[in-house]
Every structure is written in C-alpha cells, then in structure tokens.
Image 1: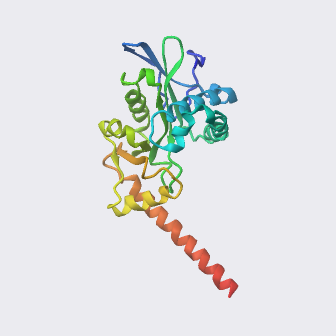
Image 2: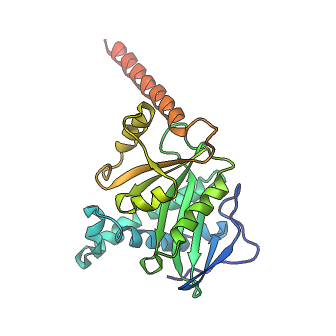
Amino acid sequence: MSINSPVSNISFTSKCCPIKPFTVKTKMGEIRFEEIPVEFCEKESAIRKMVDFFFANFSKNTRDPGWLKFQLPENAAEFKKFKESFYPVYKWLFREDDGHLSMLVARNEKNEVCGGCLSYGFDEVPASRKTTLYIDSLAVDERYRGLDIGRILVEKSIEAGKGFFTDIFLHGEKLAGGFYEKLGFKKLNPRNPAQKKVIDYIANDRFDYPEYINLYSRPLQPNKPRWYKLAAEAIEKEQDEKIKQLFMQCRKQD
C-alpha cells in the first residue's frame, strides 16, 4: 500500500500537540514517521486506505474467531462489507476532532505504509475525553514487526499528549499483552472498585472482552487523579440520573 502526502507545509492532524516527521534506520531500511496532514484525512480515499491497512493487520494478529474468519477467501465479500461500515466511523472521528487526534504513520523507503497509530481523547466513558489519551488503532505490517515500529508509534503518541492528558488507555489483544506491559501498561483490575465500574461500563459494548482482549492503562501524569476514578464517579452519577428518570416515569404512569 502506498499513500502519498506532502512533506513540506504540513498541517498536522494533531493541532494541539503535533508530532514532527522523523526517520529511523532499521535492517529493513529507513522508516519515516509522520502525521498525516489534515487535508489528506479529509479525503474519502485516504481514510479508506488507512482503514484497509488497520483491518488487514487486525485480522492477522488475534485469536478472536470473529476476526480470524476474514482470513478465509470465502469470507472476502463479508470482510469488505465489514470494513465499509467503518469508513464513516473514522471519517466522523476526524470531523469531530477537538485538536488532539493524531494519525501517526510509518512508511518504508518506497513510501508504503508499514505501521500506523490513531489516537485521541477517550470519549466512550464519561468524564474521560479531557483526561485520557486513547489508542484507537495500532498496527504494524507483519513484514516489519520486530523493528520497534509499534513501540515508537505508541511512545511518540504518548510524548505528544502527556502535557494535556493524565492517562492513556487502550483495548489490547491478549496476544500483544507482553508488548503493552513492556511499555508500562497494566490491565484494569476488577478488584479495584473504581476500575471495576469502568470495566463493567466498557464491557457492555465489547463482545470480545474478556476472552480475547484486555483493558490496559498507564499514567502519564502520576501526580494527578487517575482517570478511572473520575470516570467511575461520572458513571455512578449517570446511572443515578437514569434511575431517577425511570422512577419519575413510573410515578407519572401511576
């Protein structure tokens, strides 16, 4: 896969914490890391190419049968339809960006994409978007694994966001558990009341948890309150409000 993007006059996807282009030498040649420009991300074809790259790699590095089935030729049409359902989701992410979204891409000497990392403020859990950097999509072409590309993508994303966010969070494949733990991530602990409340909230929408993925977090500013504590309080308030509304509806019916 080859994606062209301008090198000069870059309008970074991350407006608040841009990551400047840099190059790393590896046994596979020089790998160039750069944020995809905003103008590039606004193009439908560009978003499709990045989604295709992520999904091709997601289906090869998992034990989840829901993903593994897409390796079979007879499921090619279903895989294409599945990917197409995510094109508008990624497009929406860029359109609704608050300035902290970053699409960091690694390219080889032929300008082919060999790695990518999409990150932004976590908005799936209450009171988290302004505290928690979320690694939404992370993938490295299997031919380029073992070259530290994944580590560099994550660490550069963290470096750019640590001045604003207090924590980082991601859903990680169990097969990649060792990789995340080496980077300082720890699994959310269901024995911790605040973390359990967050786990339960997220698990409602994750069919692959806990069988195939783990929920990982890492503090970026250890002196600040942890994101899951603030999120747990917000979740409890949200649940209390729903109970209150339900009670009021029942009273009206009576």
